[in-house]
Image 1 (tube, rainbow, N blue to C red):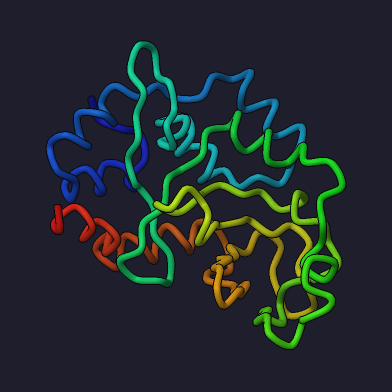
Image 2: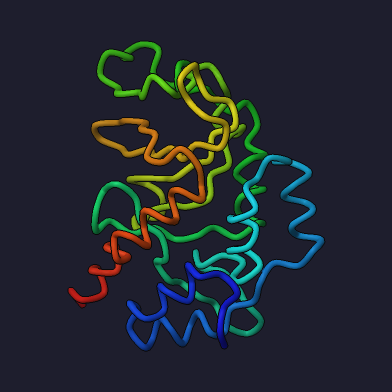
Length: 196
């Protein structure tokens, strides 16, 4: 199976055979799933939609009879890899009741948290589209698309959260730029598979 996106076609050449086989079994998001995501996040970038049309999630996602679990994304943390969430997982994240903003979460110790000036600290975190969790089930790092930037930021910028010490950093001005960075970096995060 060939994918429609250059991203997944390029990535496949860097993955071990077992992970390639898992991705070959994956199903893409349906039109109704995409509409449900766009109802919540109307500014969701087309490039993310196209990825999801190829593969609707790699984070312990059921695709027919198969459950796939493949690290397919990276960040500015070099070799540290991430799973692509399914639309269902993204929607579930957005439905968190009483979601805190960065300011509310850290207001008693803001001086210990690094927050990029381009990120608005008073927007509830569930207003950002969390599209990826790290290999540690999101416990260490997650990636977001930010639709409510601060002055100097851009709508659709990609934000990387990392824990301990906690920080929120803009790592790309758009999702398209984010994917291009991963491609130009030679899918550096796939080095994790060479260690196995």
